[in-house]
Amino acid sequence: MTDDFPPYPAALRLAGRRVVVVGGGHVAQRRVPALLAAGAEVVVVSPEVTPAIEGLVSGGEVTWHRRGFRPEDLDEAWYVIAATNVTEVNEEISRTAESQRIFCVRADDASKATAWTPAVGRHDGTTVAVVSNREPRKSAALRDRIIDGLRDGALPMRTHDRSPGVVLVGGGPGNPELATLAARRALADADVVVADRLAPRELLSELSPDVELIDVAKLPRGRSATQEQINQVIVDRAREGKRVVRFKGGDSFVFGRGYEEALACAEAGVPCTVVPGITSATSVPALVGIPVTHRGVAHEFTVISGHLPPDHPESLVEWDGVARLRGTVVLLMAVQNLPAIASRLVDGGRPASTPVAVISDGSMPTERTLWSTLAEVEGDIQRDAVRPPAIVVIGDVVAVANPSRYATA
Ligand SMILES: C[S@@+](CC[C@H](N)C(=O)[O-])C[C@H]1O[C@@H](n2cnc3c(N)ncnc32)[C@H](O)[C@@H]1O
Image (cartoon, rainbow, N blue to C red; front, side):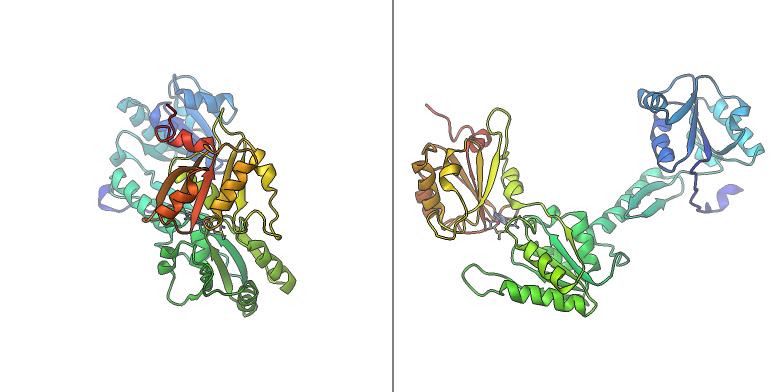
């Protein structure tokens, strides 16, 4: 009879309530952490338990009765999970639970249970629970699709913080897969998006049509919006009551002028929050297999802007000091000045044979890596017509990633 009716979904609030799990095998092991996460007082009844459950017992999180099931185990219980591998025992647990009007999950035969465990996922304070007709794989697959959709914005949930203000969002090196969940959520909640050229542009196509998109593409040495104009537009829109996302590549505070925007907001009394991004300085090398540190090879890495040549009066970089460092040097915005920087490092004492990698368009389909050395990099970048955006990695970690290229005879 009961099979004719669908289950009635309810969310149990188990905090401080006793839940009895009979059985100590892999089913119990999967259920107990979720029960603990819900705040339940978990009692496990079983002659044996898995090492993971034993760890929870010794940590004081779970009570363990090291024996077989007894009907009095269900006294004071709100919920019970029959998860032994003996059908007769599970039947006895079900019967006892039924007589005490306690809902009981059966691991061996869901058709005889009074409760089913849904496939559960959580996203941003929302619990998604999927129950199909005793088809756990189908439930889990659907749960995964819903959670993925919520995370990547395909199922937009424009219900978060919509209060006016500015969110400085770092979008990672370019591939949308490398934008954080927080970045995607901020975009899903935005009324206005002010985007840079290096922000992952594919994500902009997912914006809802009512979102205003302001493109402040700063082309190198070409058309560009000034920083003052950008500060003005984000402040103005926020003052109009809009939620503004300032969307950039990498991390907003790594050569991103993000803090100037934060200061402009503070000066204007506009609330401003920050979503950190994955900076290209470390992620682009990682994508081509170069670790910026490696045990026994580099104990430091230094990230430097190469937008000014070494002798420029406005340069803040102590290049002679950099030349004396043994670790990894990562340069951003350095394609044009790379010949001058490389020769300055060699003049300052860094061996001319020091390996150099130049990775352009990191994480994009057009990504390219040039493997070179301080002595050869000027000619190599000219020959390969290397264009920005590119990350330059200088140091022995480059040879760690590509030993055959740098093998010495
Ligand atoms: C103005 S800086 C911004 C850096 C950014 N805030 C970050 O944390 O990655 C721009 C420089 O970052 C580097 N860059 C950013 N994205 C890159 C990518 N996908 N591939 C290679 N270099 C990249 C280049 O050196 C580029 O000239």
